[in-house]
Amino acid sequence: MDKPITHDKFEQNFYNSSYGSDSFYDFYVKQVDLLKGKLAHNTIRVYNSQIVKLREFKKEATFNDIDLNFITAYEGFIKSNKGDKKGNNQNTVTKSIKCIKSILNRAVD
Image (tube, rainbow, N blue to C red):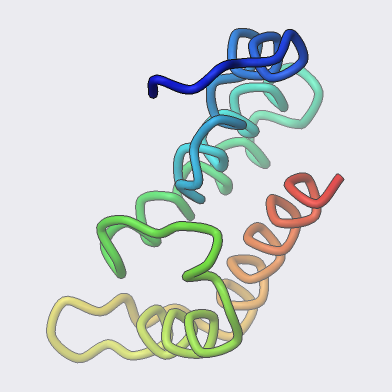
C-alpha cells in the first residue's frame, strides 16, 4: 500500500490475514477455521451455515456494517419465508445471532 510497515503490523498480517481486512466475512471464515478441532463438528457446521446465510442476506459486509439495524434486518430475513428468504424458527434465529455475537466478541478480543 506504499506505506511503511512496522514489524508488529507485518507479523499480524503475515500470521492472520483476516486482521488486515475490514471484511467481517473474511474474519468470520478465518475464525471458524481456527476453531476447527476445538469445537464439536456440529458447532462448526452451524457456524458455516451462518456465513452462507449472511452472504445470501448481504454479499459483502465490513465490521462497520454490523450494527443493530443490520442484525434486525438479518433477523427478519431469516425469519420470513417470503420469496428467497429462509423461514427459520425462533430457536434457529437465536442461534444465528449467537454465532454472529461470538465472532464479534472474538474480533474485540
